[in-house]
Amino acid sequence: MSLVPIFAGIVKGGVLLPDRPQDFGQWVRSLDGQRVVVIVKKRQSQRSVQANRYYFGAIVAPLAEHCGYEKDDMHEVLAMRFLRIEDCPITGAPRRKRTPKCDTAEFAAYVDSCIRLAAELGVVVADPDGVEIA
Image (cartoon, rainbow, N blue to C red; front, side, top):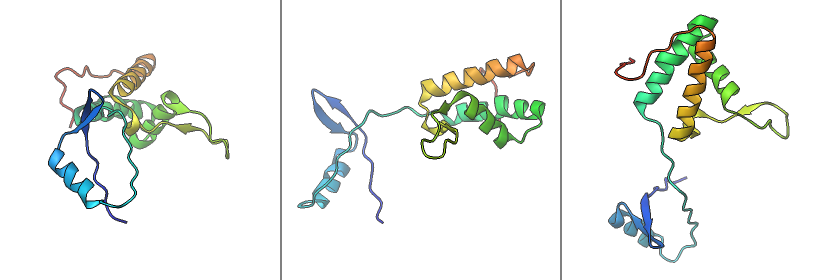
């Protein structure tokens, strides 16, 4: 299976303007005469590395310690509680949205829910402003 590039761009006046027009044009020319599939979707903002470090360092770690879980297990508990989606129609098993699939607004709401839970349990969560989480 060969790798297929993903191109980003912007739509203005109903016209797609690729961020790297030369590369996009070269790729399209390489497919001359072939049938293709074109998917255009709105770009989703992903959380920053800093936000991810804050979540795991300042929220998951102290909650895991308080509850007696490993960090990965605590993350699963939090995600299942706050990001649960419909049960699998075939097995009935509970499912959740994966945190990397959350856009920045969804992830912020998720983090807020985790912080509220921590407060209910008496777990102090550091303020993200100026906090350096290793």
